[in-house]
View 1 (spheres, rainbow, N blue to C red):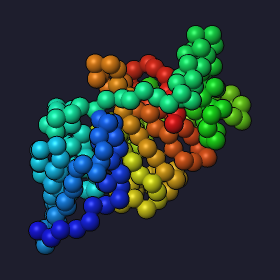
View 2 (view 1 turned 45 degrees about the vertical axis):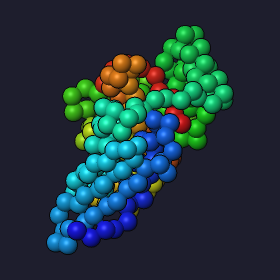
View 3 (view 1 turned 135 degrees about the vertical axis):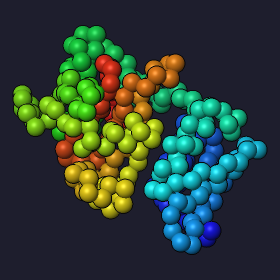
View 4 (view 1 turned 90 degrees about the vertical axis):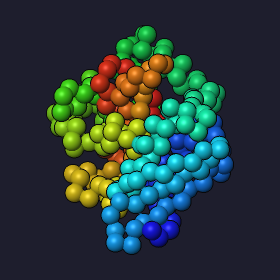
Length: 227
């Protein structure tokens, strides 16, 4: 096995998972080893008096296993959500007011004013498809037919639902997305799971850097707060 540098995307996902648990990423160490003849590589994680080794084939694959170990408390901590900053707390309060007074579309229209993207929407997972629940459009088009139904296999939400976290700073150069229909269409993408208090997965929140959309896909009804 040959030691190599951890890919920037892997390192970024690793730090995000630790920060969710309120832990300084510098207190953990990563070491990546690649076999001389190719094939599956290994990543060794050491921190908080514990160590484990993950095997993976694609960049970022091991981070979902690490996230599951964090949830089980393997490293003596469980991810927690810190209180939001005051500006975010106020935005969330406004969302609640809009939901109560104007419904889901009113809340989405408010959220849409906070981002440069054209669309802010909520989608519901229906088998292999993502079906629009509601959509706010800065251009005020009333019936965007091309966005009403999106195959889950053509979305990036599928990776967040599979791996618990999916981050790509450039979809056009990310090797994991070679051949994907939206590779290079969205500039960057961050997908994080949205869960209820007990930890039941509700869907994903998926802010993107693109002129196209800022949306969420859900397998339950709910609201979305873009970052």
